[in-house]
Image (tube, rainbow, N blue to C red; front, side, top):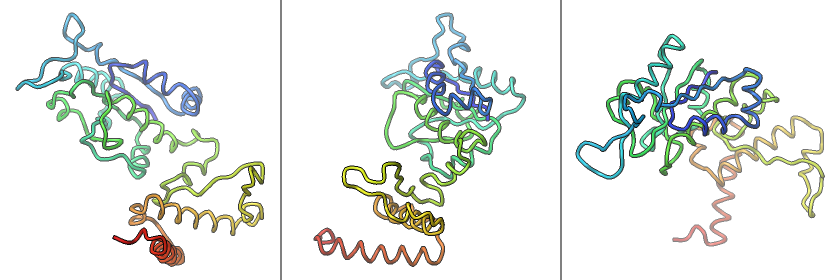
Amino acid sequence: MHYHVLTLFPEMIEQGMGTSIMGRAMEQGLIQLTATNIRDFSTNKHMKVDDYPYGGGAGMVMQAEPVYGAWKHVTESIGYKPRVIYLTPQGKVFQQSMVEDFAKEQDLVFLCGHYEGIDERVLEEVVTDYVSIGDYVLTGGELPALVMMDAISRFVPGVLNNEESAEFDSFHDNLLEYPQYSRPAEWMGKKVPDVLLSGHHANIEKWRREQSILRTLRNRPELLEDAVLSKKEKQYLDQLRRELAAEQSSTGDGEE
């Protein structure tokens, strides 16, 4: 996987990706990163890349030509036009299914805006995917790009030490991850569940799966609409819903 980030702050991208698991993956050649400074393609002698918006309004708008020049530089360097992701609150909200889809690509271009946005004409010309990481506004697209690259890289073969880690993370099968425990077996009076100490792999897997369903029901119930569940797991979920409804009723949470 080769990431190409079009940005006004390449050092921010390079520093953010240069540590921990992502940094190790780059050292091993499993992922590559090229941060291209949009300002290098300015046609202004002062290297400006923004100007006032037509029609008036607050703030400045990034001009089309420097963005187009940076994009063209990338496409010419790799010999084809890859998917271009524009990070914007107006985009589709980033989720796990998109992570797995993007991870299939050989190259991905991230376009990071700043100020009041980017001239719409160049977006229409080069962008293939409009993506948001949530319903809030940031000062630029660099942090969302880092979030997306981190998530996508987990599905690049060899990036994670444990090949199963990405497969069983939260949102696999649209479920949240089960609780995790490590040594010691008892800490501050709290014990690790007996099933995890049993060595019985089938029972452990069943417990983990049930805990994922329970945690999803309590914290993100909307995810269950698209969860991949067996017949027995659906029956277990129905049982949990009845128990939760009874619990809420007994505590008054279900009253209007």
